[in-house]
Amino acid sequence: MTPAGKIPLQEWMTRPATLAVMAALKGAGATARFVGGCVRDALLGRAVGDIDIATDAGPDAVIAAVQAAGLKAVPTGLAHGTITAVSDGRPFEITTLRHDVETDGRHARVAFTDDWAADAARRDFTMNALFLGTDGTLYDPCGGLKDAKAGRVRFVGEPAKRLDEDVLRLLRYFRFFAHYDRLPADQAALTACRAAAPRLPSLSGERVRQELLKLLAAPDPGAACSLMAEAEIFPHLLPEATALKRLIALLALERRSGARRDPLLRLSALIEVGQVGAEQVATRLRLSNMEKNRLVALAAPELPIFGDLTGSMRNLILYRMGGPLTRDLALLAWAGETAKGDADNQAYVRLIAAADCWRPKLFPLRGDDALKLGLAGAAIGQALAAVEDWWIEQGFAPDREACLARLRDTIERGETP
Image 1 (cartoon, rainbow, N blue to C red):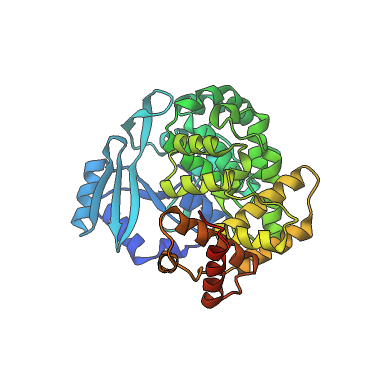
Image 2: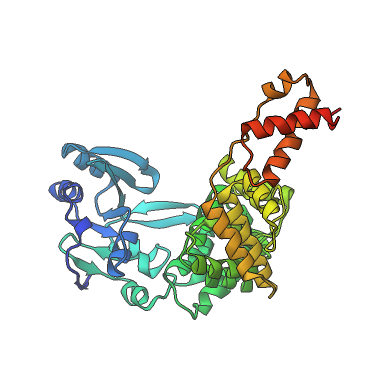
């Protein structure tokens, strides 16, 4: 391949751990170059995370070279030519150059090659088909440099063919659009995505979850989600995603309130469901138990959230649900009202401020206190609940002695069975 230029050496390229891996491959007579995300992000001035390497050496030769250099070699994907080298505790994914022999719409059977252009031609997007030598020499067989700098996510070759090979690339397109693209979108890509959308249900819930949450973690995924709606992607991917306006409003409120990016909160804003629907979405997307419980709590809160809350009702909500959940629910309710063009901004500002300042409160009484006063069975819980409600209404001010006095009064008045 003809070099497309040269870039200054980056810190991640010159780390001892990186140099050790590249030196191991070079010492075995292999040509190795950085590829994919690390090259793309380096060119765009973004932080580089995972470091992927392409090489013309076969998988067995890579393992031998890595081990000969005293590094650990993990055969993470031998069938596709991928070895993970571990250097100074850092993983480096090394993949032999390859081309597709056969595809089934999701997985490919590959053959190894020493042709760098052929390897680039099988990749998804042009900005991911960039190679970078250890000396900073850049190789660009598919025009990815121009696309990356222009903020244009473009398929390598014909979009429809790329999607026929692997329909997961449809979700990756919108995820990359959210993180890297600038409008207007590539119309050929959108047309191909619309046509391929009916095949999305064939993807595993885990892969859909991974791509969707990564998309929603973008600084502003609104444009990407709007394009997905226009291209009729959601009916095949997430039929519950009918609240796009609420998501857009939430994104604006996040910027206004300084809220952190929260993919799960954004997902809850996008879908219009109750408890059962949230549970079904969580199951379909293979969310963790923690993620599932949070999604259900956001979709079907224990207590209703609205802007104009009285002080006692606000205290009850904060006490029962805690500050973080109350804040999230306030943002969702605010976004929902904003999307309808009707929101009491200052009321929500006050509620969010109260949630941010909230510290958990501990009710001073326990079951033993009611037992000592002669109560038993269900009457214990009922009496304590009545006193706790009073304590909340009083703004949590009454201390233990005051609560005990209230409990005695409650019993004497016969307000328990």
